[in-house]
Length: 229
Image (cartoon, rainbow, N blue to C red; front, side, top):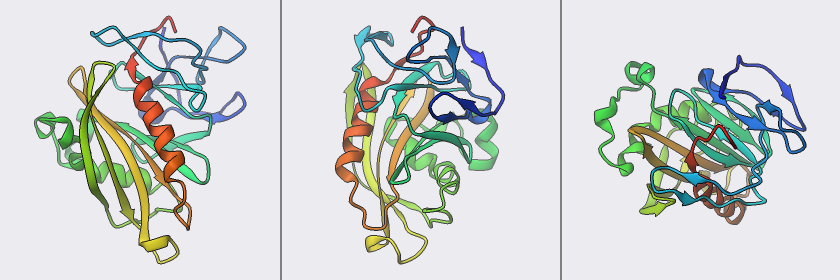
C-alpha cells in the first residue's frame, strides 16, 4: 500500500524526499520491501486505456504523485528534494520539477480547477508555482519568468499531454543567451492537472539532447498508480 511519509532522508544509493506530504510507493532494486525509491523493472497497465507504459534505463526510479493524484512517473536516479511546492531531482547539470494542482494552493497561486480547461492551460496557469519550485535551485533562483516557445498536444499511453519547450529567463548574464532551456509535459489525470519539466542549469546550455531523451522517456513511463508494482 501507499505510505504517507514524513519529510526525511532515506539513504538507498541516493537521497529522496517526499514533497508536500506526498505519497511514494516504491521498491529497491534488490528488495521487495517498500521504501521511497523504486526500480522500474517491468511493463504495467496504465489508466483506463490499459496501454503498456515504456521502461527506460535512463529512469529506473519511480515517483508517485501526492495529494490523491494517483499516478506514477519514472525518474532518473538523481538526488531528490523538496523545491517550493513541488518535487525536484537534480544532477547538477540538469534538474526536474514534478508538480501538481492542489486546492490548498489556489489562494496563493490565483487559480482553480476551472483555470485548466485543456492541457495547454496547465503550465501557463501554474507558472508562478513552477517558478517557486525553480527558486529552490541556485542556478535559476530569482529567475524572472519562464517563456514557452513551442508546444504540441500528443497522446501517450492513452493520456492527452501537452509537450512544450522554452526557457527560464536567467537571473544574470552568466548563462548563454540569458536563458535556461526547459522541456516539459503537462496533463490532466483523473481531473487533476500536473506537469513535469526538465531544466538545463549549465552555463553553456549544452544539455538539450540529454534533456529530450530523459523527459520523453518520463512521458512514456507515465501511468496510473499501481500498488502491486
